Amino acid sequence: MNNKIRIAAIGDLHMQRNIVGTFRTTFGEISTTADILVLCGDLTNTGQIEEAKILAEELEFCKIPIAGVLGNHDYADDKPEEIKKILSSAMFILGDQPYIFKEVGFAGVKGFCGGFDNHVAMPFGEHVLKQFVYESISEALKLEAVLAELETEKKVVVLHYSPIRQTIEGEPLEIYPLLGTSRLAEPIDAFGVNVVFHGHAHHGSPKGKTGKGVPVYNVSLPVLSRSKPSQTYVVVEI
Image 1: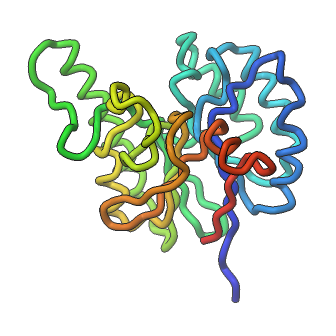
Image 2 (image 1 turned 45 degrees about the vertical axis):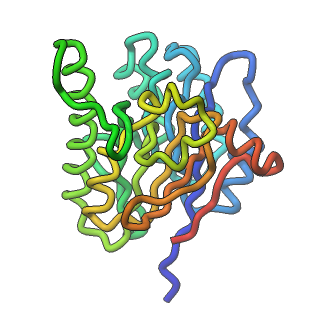
């Protein structure tokens, strides 16, 4: 029996009123080429309620299940809970709870900044820096907790921020610490995840892997538009 599923992924839609209708054809295509769609944050452009409502209407053109996370832009107007409530009518918002689809477990968090490998920021010095680092640690712990709940053989992680350095290469070196943290890769490797999707790094690279070889895809719309303009989403079968 073939128990594989096809996962379509895209991030950084940055929905706003002047691009209404842009994604309808894409969502329709995805419905015929994949079994489930995952969205990797920055679903709205400035975290406005109106933007979330527009996207919820656009997502009606997708006829398969949708799961995803918010990104930093979705927090810009300090209304993430309202954004989640609106989008929940069209998709499953990953966070404290995993999502199970055809015996595949999906876990996701927004993630946060913090740096990579031997250059991860540590909680030392000024209080504000400690808060910054603790937020990074908190997001990694949230991901670990959700992955620990999953008993499925196959596991998929959905993020906004990157868990590895490879998929942000192409961005200015000065902003690498703001694009993600390898703290997120620790639970990914520990729990035998099959594949990871993230967004956020608009000028990054399309694909990399964790230390233990888990494939990681940067599915930010600007990245996908450069690499394959005719298909602005990735489809991975697991």
